[in-house]
Structures are given as C-alpha cells and as structure tokens.
Amino acid sequence: MDASSSANPTTLKRKGKTSEREMGIFAVQCEECHKWRQIDTQEAYEQIRRRLLEDQFVCMQKEGTTCEDAGDLVYDSSRVWSVDKRGLPETPRGFRRSLVMRKDYSKVDAYYVTPTGKKLKMYSEIEDFLKATDPDYDSRMLEVFSFTVPKIMEKTVPKRTKE
Ligand SMILES: [Zn+2]
Image (cartoon, rainbow, N blue to C red):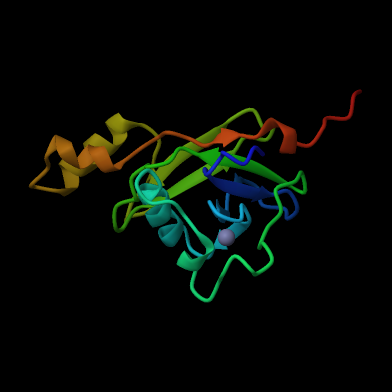
C-alpha cells in the first residue's frame, strides 16, 4: 500500500467458517509511522473514520499506544483488505452497519440492521422504516446512512486456482 494512503481499511479474516463473510476487523493506518492499528469496536472505528477528513489518525489516539509499538496488523494477503472512504457517517444509535464480502470477492455489500433486527439494503427501505417508526421523521435523518462500500484491495484477494 502506498504511504500516502491514510485510509481506514476493514479487513476480512479468510479463516473461520462463517456462512457470511462479514467484516469484523477494523484498522486504521497511522499518518506518522504508517503502522496499522486495530480498533476494537466498530463504533470506535466509525468515529475515527468520520473524523479522518479533518483529523489525521496517529497511534497515540489508541489508548496506551505509541508509534514505538509494533503494528497490530500487517497489510498483506493473509487477510483480504478493503479500504473505506474517509468521512463516512457513524451508524446511528440502535442500528448496526454490516459489510459482507461476496464469496467471489467481487464486491462488498452494505446493509443496516434495525433495532428490531430487520435488514435494510436500500435507502428506500431505510426511509420506509424511519417513516413508520419515527413520528418526527425528517428526510435529513437519511443523511447519516450510507451504502458507500469499501474498496477491495485486489492484491490481497486469494488467487483462484485454475481449473
Ligand atoms: Zn504511529
């Protein structure tokens, strides 16, 4: 990865037999030492991601960590990496945002899980849900939802064995 990339990737563990390849590891690259720091919760990761346009991420922002410490993760093909767009909004309270890698690694799909456990895959579904559940619905409420998915880093995708 080129050093100018201060993007915030999510990584996907290739091992582990989950039926869905949901991304469960979140990492941010330090602007100073370029090491990758794993961020423990999606919530904390999303906060950093939202601020990345204004605030550069450095190791010190992770509690008890400095640039002297070894990196938490190495950017290599032991995991499939995908890089998020900076500045994406944080998932609204009560909702969960899920990123799922397609089996052929061609695309990441994003969806939101509502507080009642319903999966919403399009803006129109979110709109309908908010309208139905919130009497003070306002279209601006949609601005904190985003289906912008991270870019898959091709070089980390496992090579297909040719038939
Ligand atoms: Zn650092």
